[in-house]
Image 1 (tube, rainbow, N blue to C red):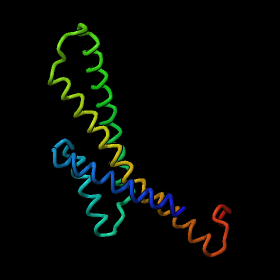
Image 2 (image 1 turned 135 degrees about the vertical axis):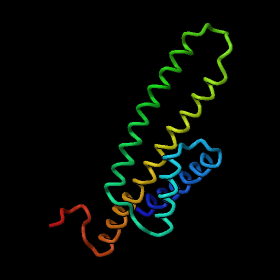
Image 3 (image 1 turned 45 degrees about the vertical axis):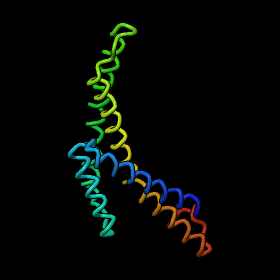
Length: 140
């Protein structure tokens, strides 16, 4: 369990670094930037977001992800229609990579919101084991 906790802490660090780079490069969309800044603020203040906010953020990310997937499919179709050996439109290629990075940023934000929940469960199980109780037993 300690190993899993340390891996989750390391994953959090990597995800935050990834999002920091995207933010500096101005690849994050306005909503993602605001959500990431709220996340950082909550981490610094040791506060948890309310369930309604988390739900709204997740729904928004899901909708945007569907739009992104549709646009990436359009780009793929356009690329397939071009003759082999022809030069790929640089703007189209750039858009494809930005969309892919934005998609990864939404997944990273989602993971950052889920990791603390998993860590809480692991810490609870660890405390139960220290107290000599079986953490897998049903709590009554």
